[in-house]
Image 1 (tube, one colour):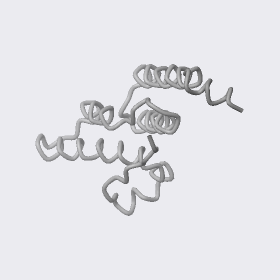
Image 2 (cartoon, one colour; image 1 turned 90 degrees about the vertical axis):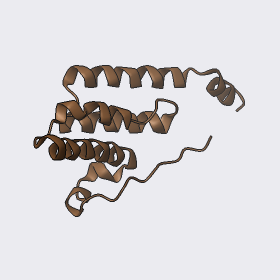
Image 3 (tube, one colour; image 1 turned 45 degrees about the horizontal axis):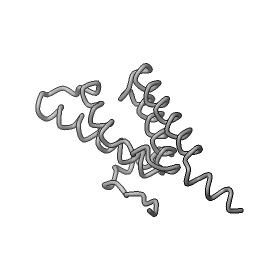
Image 4 (cartoon, one colour; image 1 turned 180 degrees about the vertical axis):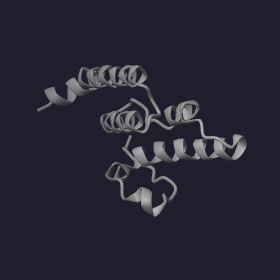
Length: 117
């Protein structure tokens, strides 16, 4: 299966200046989180960033391949900086990425490919 990155909706010009948003996965997570905060603002007159973290989590890449795991790590790190995650949640998510990367490195398919050379 070929790795493919989805390009998120256009961001505001000010948001595009952030280097982290060069990664489409990080940009997608940020857009989901930003839209949830804006919806809270419109509905309740106040933004609830902590309540919007589930939306950020739903936008995280899957832990199914090397590039997806790297994007997942980048998204979690950026989410921590944004305040979408507390340190305890980010730690658990990064541990999940570590386990996924370890499993990927020890997968039977990978061993077969390496032994073919």
